[in-house]
Length: 248
Image (cartoon, rainbow, N blue to C red; front, side, top):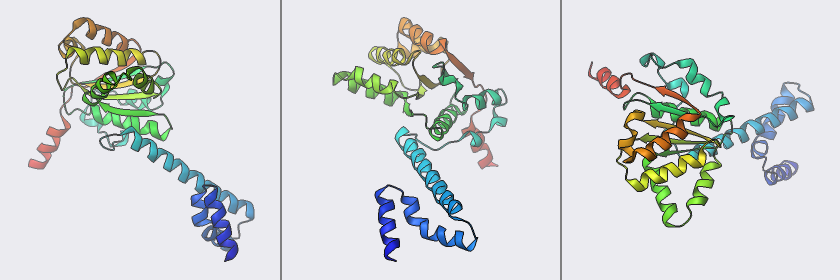
């Protein structure tokens, strides 16, 4: 028993928590199964690696600050038949990161833009790809705070270190001229360096109304679209679908 306590303490000091909590149980199991020492070592090391990977993924998901947990598997492609499923699945191969491409989801409310954006982010966490989620309103709030505190360049640099910045719900809330200029600075800082995943309920032709400045709107569109994969979703709302199901 003394050896058990010493070994457990040593494993905990090394940060091998899974091994510390399970090595005795695994030793007994391997003994009963007539496994040799290498098999035993392989078993406990593999489980330690799996647990560390899961902790890393969960940490990244928490830090990305998604408003909900969504996966690609949960998305009902049959309800949006005009959306090319294979092209969406190609996104989560993450080849788009090599060319700092952007992913743009355009369509009316309720068609699954946020779901897909979050699902791609969650999958990125599983691949240890750094990403962070903002609504457009929250991002602009943080940009304004950074500007007032004279830390805007630092904040933009921090965002540039993320391989993906997800911006959701652009166009849902009115913006002013300051918002437009700050959003341009964000997009410009990411341009051809790292990727943006953005969803909007407004077509590009309407963005001059969103930003109250056609010149700034054109500059934003130019940089977002130059290297991008654009998905226009024109189907029905999932929320309406669920309401109809509930009322039957």
